[in-house]
Image (cartoon, rainbow, N blue to C red; front, side, top):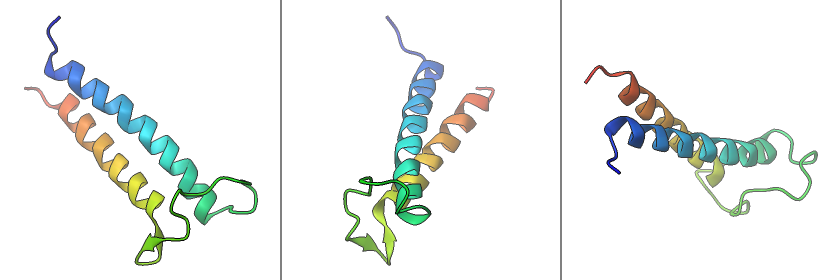
Length: 77
């Protein structure tokens, strides 16, 4: 079975969406509603980079992956 560029980009898009949903959930629980999402926090909730929890950086990176995959799927090549 031969993989095409489109199939690879769709797989990357699906994984990016899954990662964004997971890291977004952790970020939401960490930043917005820490008391309502009981028992859920970033794995490194005591640490962060420049005071921002690391799960927020994961959410941003997964969002960038989604944008790049969508741009690749939208290109005419």
